[in-house]
Image 1 (tube, rainbow, N blue to C red):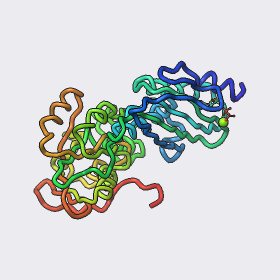
Image 2: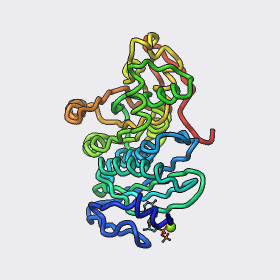
Image 3: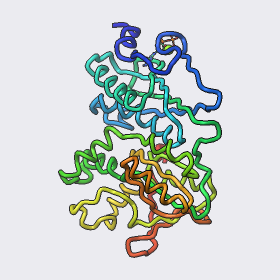
Image 4: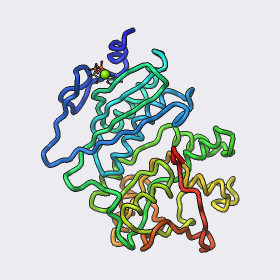
Length: 319
Ligand code: ADP
Ligand code: MG
C-alpha cells in the first residue's frame, strides 16, 4: 500500500464545513468576517505522552481531544484540524483503530480533518486545530481581576490516578478504576463550557499540566495571586482514601497531576448565580475553589484552615 492509499483509506472522510479538504496541496476554509480564527498545535510522542503499546483507538481520540481542549480554553468553536503523523510502519489494524478514535472525536465535536502529513519514523502525532471566535471575544489568560472567584469544571486528578495505578505507584479501588481510566484515555474537552463562558468569565485556561501550573499561567499573565481552599477542590472522593487530601500522594495528583483537560476560569462574584445555572444546564460540576488576590503565586488554605506549603507545581518537559 502506498502512502497515498494509506491517506485515502485512513485519513480521508467527508467534511462538513470545508471548501477543500484532503487531496490537494493545501486545504481551503472560509470564515465569516466577524470571526477570528483561533489556532493551536499539540504534539503527542510515544513513550512521553502515551505508552507505545497503548490502545490505538484512544491515542487517536486523545490526540484530537487535547487540541480541542485548547479551543475550549479560548472560548473558541473548534472546526478544522490537520494531522501530521510519523509511523514506525504501515500497520493497517493499528491505523484502522487510530483513525476510528480520531474520527469519533472529530464527529463528537464537529471538527473536519482537512489535511496533514504522513511519514515513516518513531510514532509521533502532531495535530493542529483551528476554531472560530467572534472578534475580540476570545478568553485569554490575562483577563483575571482582583477578587474574582476561581472556578474549575469536573474533577481533578482522575487521569493522574489512573496513570499512577498503571505504573504501579498507586492502587486505585476497583470502583474508581474505570472512571479514572476513561479520564486518562478519552478526555472530554469542555467546548460547550468554553463557549458559554464568553460573557461570564474574565479568563480561562485548560488544565493539561496540573491545576497549580496552569493557574500559575493565569496569575503570571494577569499579574495577580490566588488563594485556594483545599477543602473545596473537587476530586474523586472514596472511602478508600481515608486520609483524603491529607495524603501527600493524592494531594500531588489532584493539584499537580497532568491530563485533566478541565477548565479553570475566573469570574466576578456577581456571576455566581449564572455559573450555578450553567452547571445545571451543562450537567457538569462547576466548583468555586478560591479567589484572586494581590501579590503573586498560589497560597493554599488547608483542611483546618492552616497554610499549606506545596512545592510541586506540575508537569514540565524540561525541568
Ligand atoms: P504534499 O506532497 O503536497 O505535501 P502529501 O502527499 O503530503 O502532499 O499529502 C497529500 C494530501 O493528503 C494533502 O492534501 C495532505 O494535506 C493530505 N494528508 C497527508 N497526510 C495526512 C494525514 N495524516 N491526515 C490527513 N490528511 C493528510
Ligand atoms: Mg506532505
